[in-house]
Length: 289
Image (cartoon, rainbow, N blue to C red):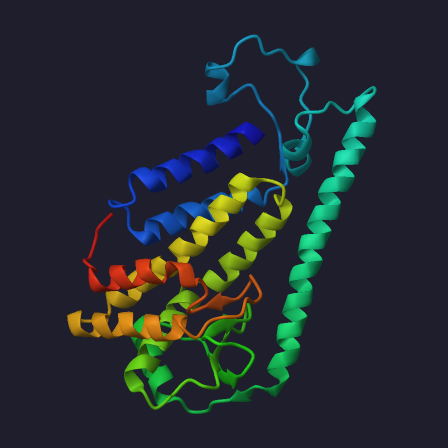
């Protein structure tokens, strides 16, 4: 089963590269979301009913019995039977995996609480007519809090069940066009529950912290989650507005210098992706695949 999971990751990565011009960013994003969902399932029950058995020869199973495997540890140590002299090796790899997982998880929690503490000084923006208008355009009905804070250099979405849009203090809210772009982008993230999916992806990454292939998939996922959101925003804009949207991307990405909590959704999180997003905005054409 661990081979199946790794093969899936490789196939998706190759498929994304080969069909990158034919696939929409939204389709790529959906592929990564399904992969990370699978990566979060900690156990598998091996079975002889597998497509991979068609290509394997000489495989034998003792007494026809199967053992539930903890995949995270097996990926780190290779297959180690829980018997005889291998038991100590299994315990060693279990300890290494758990230590890495806890370090990763604790680090993210520290960043989260630091961010939450800095947001104590944030102030609420009440009665934003433009936000309500954008909510109607996007189809978001839940209450969304709007805050302003110096904790970030770019607009972000924070929260799980009660998401908030947090704007940097330097942002000029009198620019209606720019604010429309920001609100549409962040509201689409909220409508699609991207802030929750990203949290789950980070958790899956923490479980597979030792696997460079999963880190690569996570990096590609971050690209596709933003470009797919851009696609849906661009679908709501006309040609001249799309050019203005590209300008908004450039302006906000140029101000982003600090790194922040991996679990947050940020408008301009990845500066290295700026050129790709700008070109996509300027050359946007509706796609059906």
